[in-house]
Length: 470
Image 1 (tube, helix red, strand yellow):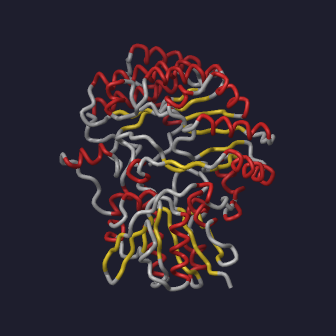
Image 2: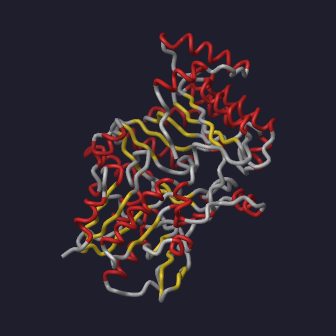
Image 3: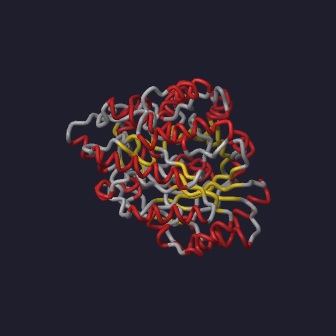
């Protein structure tokens, strides 16, 4: 009889497939283990789904992202512990990678936390549970031993080409197509990031390492998935998809050679785009590249250098021009409100947002506020200077990363940015005849930076409220 493994994905406002759970579930021998993935986004109340498997399950695993998903993960975990007092509960994901021991110290119902890449780690955890062996030699975990929290040595990043292919049969792919409103297939082709951005937790979690699946294997897997699921778009959930030019060109060629008639999207740093040739962009577009995400963060080169982005502003404009020529949409995220950020820096960001937005209606320029994400260099600096981070797992579950500003943004500046974000979005949206007068007025407002009496904003947001993100 196979051992049953229950894996839970917490509720969230986005509908990406739970690939982290698919990955660790795929690492287990299907002859020995029955993996059951339950997604809180697919059930109004996931507990009845979980409860029917609890009594004969070997363990209960949860992936936890810092913020509101952690709140739901904690709620469900505590409920599971009440229903089954002895089942081993394992947490993995970003939160436990950032807070390996603190998670166990904060929450008695959690038995084991996993740090970093989880496929081999979880496989070894399950083997220890199956054979009732100690966890002493399992790298990349923290666990309880004789009432004490023990932290084992970390695990090096494993070459993704040595890991098994993802078994999408573990989830209801069609259900995610329905939630997304399109047949968009999610795929992770790489793990980690080489770069050193001071606001990002990646350097802390992965030690500036990177591993990626080779194009030939990717092409073979995607062709099989395409034949089975008939998706029309692939969303590559990579931190830095365009890290190696040769690999990207190889992947694009795989789409063409295997007749995978689907568009695709991925993340691109501006310096990576700078290193691609015009022919490279052309081939990517020909293969189906429809959109890239290029993190800009700031319109000030001085601020960019302070953030250690290691790119030049002219690279951003170069990428924008190339994407425009080849019909590739771009998301250019910006961040304002860094500690000690000057008014001149924010003004440079606002001006750059205007310029990029006006270049192409397929360019979007969201502006976020800096909030100290645990593990990043800036966060270490601000906490050393007295900034108080959440202290408990409950507080981290309530922490809002997107919807509000940090203490370095005055109320006046917050109001200005919020009004600018609204009018800039309206001004350069794809033209529609019925909205043309409002667009022209929004363009005038942005040009003059005049946002008093925002009647249009009140009317539009009353008729169509923006979704709450966290």
